[in-house]
Image (tube, rainbow, N blue to C red; front, side, top):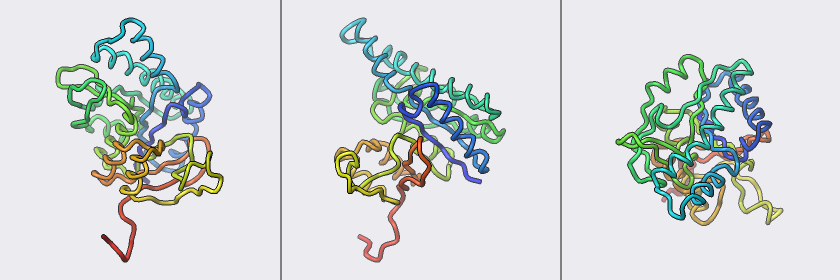
Length: 250
């Protein structure tokens, strides 16, 4: 039995039907004997919609209030997913960033994670409940909601996996792994079975949009095995891990 942290992006939870599909997927992991902890983004397009609403009020809204506004998108997604799981006979509870608590600095819209209190989270998992955590958000020392900026949900998932000592962190998205080139542009591109953190960080820094460089750097620092795979198709995806066995080490 493995403890797996799964992160689902906006396209994976972009509609009620897709959220139902994610719930079915989690059920299959549970039936295989795994413990699952879930991190979810907001539904596709929701963060942009909320951002536009804030800027419609005033040209330059306060960063603190924008964090409160933008963080509400994840709240909707995690509640819907917890409802879907419960309807399938899987005990689930949704958690906002401050409820577990993901503590950050006070740099609104670009906060950095400082610590995660895993006592409550581990207790929930030990009871056989699937925690469904809002990505992209935390709380500062003043009790204010913060957001993590670009790549925030990926970073939340990696941080939760590191704090729990999870066996693997799966980034579930609309692609089935990391390719040698963009398969939509280059039909001969092939999917890679494994990639090192260093190689993935270079790819991400050069414009690959599969993972944000921040989350890859975080995973490498804490040696969290990352796997990129499709929400919508079965497959092994691409495992991002430490240096592979190689006779010619640097």
